[in-house]
Image (cartoon, rainbow over all chains, first blue to last red; front, side, top):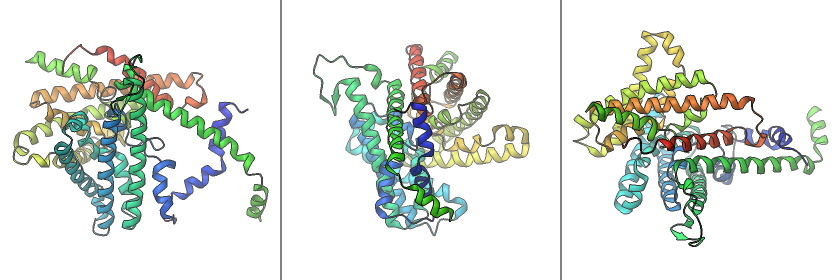
Amino acid sequence: MTGPENATELVRHAPGAHEAGAAILPGRTTTPGYDFLRGVWRENPVLVQMLGLCPALAVTNTVANSLAMGLATFFVLTGSSLLVSTFKNWIPKEVRIASFILIIATFVTIADLTLAAVVPDIHKALGAFIALIVVNCMILGRQEAFASKRPVGRALLDAFGTGFGFIIAMVMMGSIRELLGNGSLLGYSVFGDSFEPWIIMILPPGGFLTLGLILIVFGWWRGRKAAEVPRVRRWPHGVASRRAA
Amino acid sequence: MSADLFWILVSAMLVNNFTLHLFLGLCPFMGVSAKIATALRMGAANIFVLTITSLVASFLNAYVLPHAPYLRLISFIVVIASLVQIVEMTIKKVSPTLFRELGIYLPLITTNCAILGLAIFQTNRGYGFLEGLAFALGAGLGLTLALVLMASIRERAELADIPALAKGMGLVLIVAGSLSLAFMGFAGLATP
């Protein structure tokens, strides 16, 4: 059995780590499926890249709030990626960041007004955090790194994947916090009346603690997976000798 | 009147701390909190930009936005971004020493949600010019306090025997959770 120190060592030197890093370099061709799936799991914006943390911690005290925030962000990300990718040849390089932010702000205004009209309760609970989608670094990051360089279809796939990954992370946080902090899911009681709710989980400290524990569990899981790799790939001698030759 | 201003400042600094209670400005909180010296500089840059933002937001709220409320978000973000750019160029020209001290932090602050958050909260609560200034100063001091506390703990944690699994972001988040818990002790000290 390997200790924790060995596990992290293996993560750093795992054969897959280098390949994963190389695949995201711009200019390298990727398949449409990869463009979609990358954002969902392997480069999940919240759980792996640590982007968009403010909403992920601030509004995830119930599943309903998390889902509304996730969907609003998904809409803004998809809309902005579509527009940026469509107009990428008309946007001058020097003012591209300002143009991206203007496009994002427009979609956030649409989302803000729509939520206020359709679900006023949730709009009130989310408060200023809807407007703060503008400064979610995840959205600007996707425009700069992907949508402004790729064709419209791929940009949309990437936005769907990243947005979906964001929703997954939000709902995961929201479920854990609502389940432990309130004993319910989506407002329906799960544990019954005898359950003593952990109030701390729906208060601000609970957000930090939940995300911290999720990251530690994922790190442990990834360390275990990486530790298995050397045993599975027994044949790299041949590869190594071919490279040397 | 002055007592009100004082309580707005204390409330923004301790009770509703921007980082630990409202989750604003987490990127610098996670990113540049490894050393106390850089944390202090980042805090100073934040106080500076927050104060200017508050002035601009008061101006926009008083003269521009009553005519076009739907432009609120767009006008805030455009004005803040261009203002930080102008401030950066001015400091570079007037005081190169200070510019080197602030370094990369000044442009980074533009995309910091605490800045836009301040403008939006100030508008939502209907703060005027002076209240806005007190709010911005309190928020900036609160951010600096959180940053410096976090940096001190992380400097000590460097020497501690922490399980390898918890090192990195996991540890930072757990520590932030404990800090946030500690700051909840200020609840009831002042009402916003």
